[in-house]
Length: 100
Image (spheres, rainbow, N blue to C red):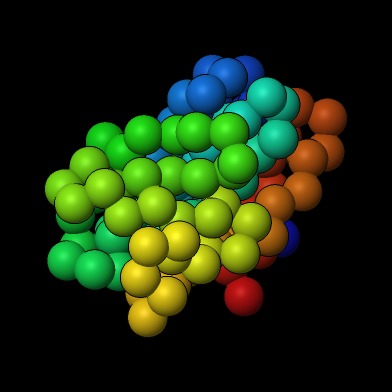
């Protein structure tokens, strides 16, 4: 696992785009739970940093509203699309991400 950011850098119900080993990773804080995913929607590549975070936990693409489960990456609207999600571990205030 590699360091991605400090937990304090990602506000509750907020997002932070970071670069980890040359890869854009979107970090999301939902009630203290941190999720990590790719920043491009698998449908048409829209940047998800502008997406809407909802309890569930889901992230909605800003372009067409496709909703993705932040735990599994599954698209709730169109199962043929899957968002790449990354395992996250917290060590104190450090957010670590496994790029696999």
